[in-house]
Image (cartoon, rainbow, N blue to C red; front, side, top):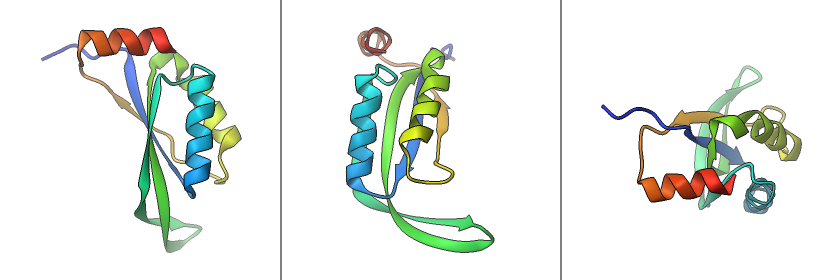
Length: 108
């Protein structure tokens, strides 16, 4: 099995496409993420909030970053986000092409 890399993918959802795009540009501009994919087709999210089941349309961001950038990235997402408790889920990256990973590391 491949050794896990220092690369991380972070999932964040936003309530609007403009908010998602603003956040993507801000974190890439600050070199907190090398790339952010904005899924511009709304997702339907079903979740529990304040004791009730809620449903809303959201836009997904997939942020590519490194372990070392995670604390600052999370702080920036919280600062920019309109939600009281924004989603910030970190996924490990087990491997990838050497060229892509090199670019990612150089970009943050």
